[in-house]
Amino acid sequence: MDTSPSHTVTLDDVRGAHKMLSGVARVTGMEGSRHLSSLVGAPVHLKCENLQRTGSFKIRGAYVRIAGLRPEERAAGVVAASAGNHAQGVALAASLLGVRSTVFMPVGAPLPKVAATREYGAEVRLHGAVVDETLRAATEYAEQTGAVFIHPFDHPDVIAGQGTVGLEILEQCPEVRTIVVGIGGGGLAAGLAIAVKSLRPEVRIVGVQAAGAAAYPPSLAAGRPVALDSVATMADGIMVGRPGDVPFAVIRDLVDEVVTVTENQLSKALLLCLERAKLVVEPAGASPVAALLAAPRAYEGPVVAVLSGGNVDPLLMQRILRHGMSAVGRYLSLTLRLTDRPGALATLLGVLSVVDANVLDISHVRTDPRLGLAEAEVELHLETKGPEHCDAVGSALEGAGYTVIA
Image (cartoon, rainbow, N blue to C red; front, side, top):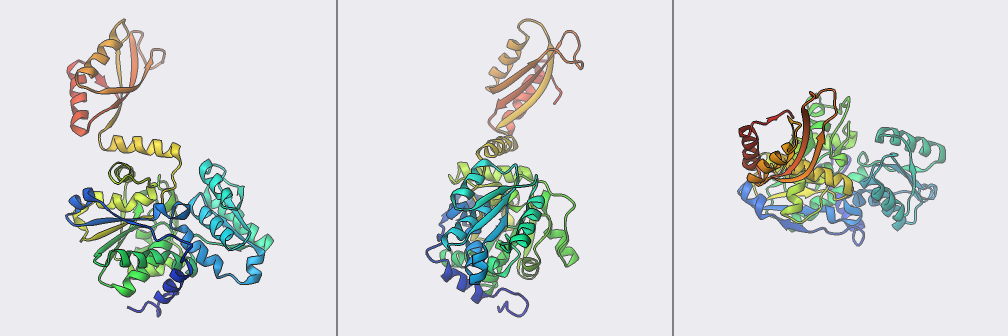
């Protein structure tokens, strides 16, 4: 398949990027997953871009883009806007190429990501509460200083760099039948699709978006990029409200299907990656796994799921893991009311002990306008053993005369 007539990026561009990245980007490993393979009914492999330099695939496109600048452009420096992965990719790529970089990040960006971006050599400027505000600040800086703005996905050089992931997949798993990849703006999926479809047009490529930031389905239906009114998802790496113009055309023509996953499915996938594969993956990176968990028999194997990144703030990881444990029935939060008398709390805990529910945290409220004079409200956080155990806990409380109110 020749992609050159309709697309600004060709297989030769991706191959050129692959040579350029030799010694710069790692050829990341491919790990088999017995658990996912058993669910899908065919071999499933994980392409571990979470173990790439800077913790995501972004170094590939950033390096190719900056390396392609003219000498006078390099002298002016580069600027980028990002909440994390692109920031680190640009910072490291610029440092390796001897180019000055300035990266704008939101004021609330996780401290580890800010620190890592600085350590990779960028001047970090915190501006704006959300990425859109940060992006405007970065483009204004580019206009004022002449620095070259490095877009995270909407540029042919960036797409060619990200496409090298596809070449590696075909080398590492030549028998692949389906590739599942997360989509935000679309740079990774577009580059991968160009590489793979040019060499193996029969391979099915499935893009995955978070349901709360799924701009591609309505855009594909409209035949042009459509901006969402709002976006909200834990998967900040793919939380993009409008497809890029350049990747959109490629994804429209070459990606076979775009599916969406829920927040529960994302948190379950992240938990699975950590427990079963022993891999730290950010929510965006876990989105292909979430898609496999949501509809395991929908994918012809062998399947390759691209784990696009592993940069997750420890505090966010803690919240996501708790969310994931709740989604799979291993963490239960509930609130109930009881009569406020001596021994009432001990009696409640005795009921929970009988059904082997481990109390992680408890809050006992006596003074609230919503409560009667002889009432107390108890909020419990329990460690449970799955959905059946959660049902058993609820039945035991109901049998003991308690009414769960939340």
